Length: 85
Length: 146
Image 1: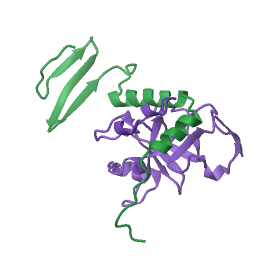
Image 2: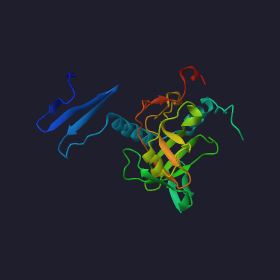
Image 3: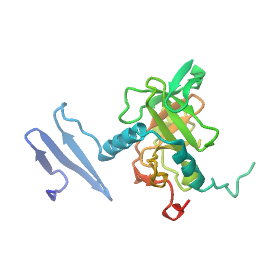
Image 4: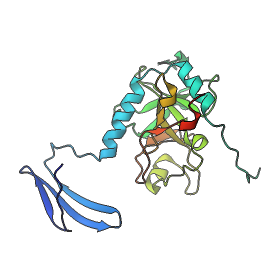
């Protein structure tokens, strides 16, 4: 993996027409500006992972046995102690 | 109407019971209408999110508050409004589960919960800003003996 250090306002070019600009740093968050042609799909990493995870969830046939086993092994829902009726 | 389901065969369901996804399930953007089904043998806590449009698409979802009592993500105000929740109302969060035959390895997505408002029957899958795992184990390691 290529690792570069950048200051606020500095940018990185990917190829000739994709520019990443480091806009702001605050705490553990970094704001990036992305300038890219419309044909380039820009996705947050976790979005792609969620899509993959969703596809996996939808494509796996769940056996009733597995489900029953899972249910049996899950801790029983905890009742709230101070729930007022 | 009668809908075809993946796990229960054809089922009769009132149109008004169907969920309308205001923000679709990621990767399934072409599907917006689902039925939320349950299996009395498995009981509450688990739901079947069955696509009305494509019978073979069905997600098993888990009520997250029941399994992860400390799970209380911050839901953006815009999403609250979109789904018709009141500002202080508690929002039921469901997680899409991946349940393999070795059920001990089952995981659930805590980063991208499915929010369902039962009254206007609106729903959405959102991605939280907070740090939560996409593949959280449903069963703790020490419970694997079963």
